[in-house]
Amino acid sequence: MDTATPADFTPAEGTITMFSTTWCGYCNRLKKQLDAQGIGYTEVNIEEVEGTAALVEELNGGNQTVPTVIFPDGSAATNPSAAQVKQKLGV
Image (cartoon, rainbow, N blue to C red):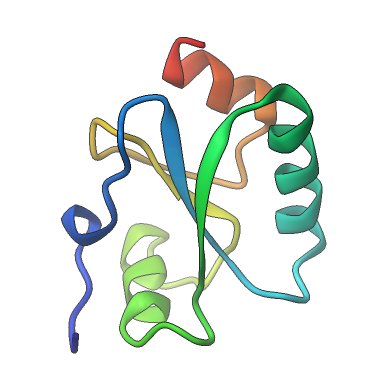
C-alpha cells in the first residue's frame, strides 16, 4: 500500500482506529483510558505500517501528530480525550 487513505482504516461501529508510535506518551495514556472504559480500538503504528505516517500528516495539516484517531463515520480527531472518543461513538 503506497498511499493510505482514511477509508483504508475506517473502523467498525463502536470502535476507533488509533494511529500511534511506541514512544508516544499521549498514545499510551489514551489506550489506558480506552481500555479502562471498555472502548475498542485498532492500533496502527505509523513507524511500522507503510503509508500511514503520510496519512497522519495529511489529516493534521502536514504534522505527524499522534494519537490521531479515525471514527466509524470516517471523521478524524487529533489527540482526543477518552471522553471525546466516548461522546463521538455514542457509547
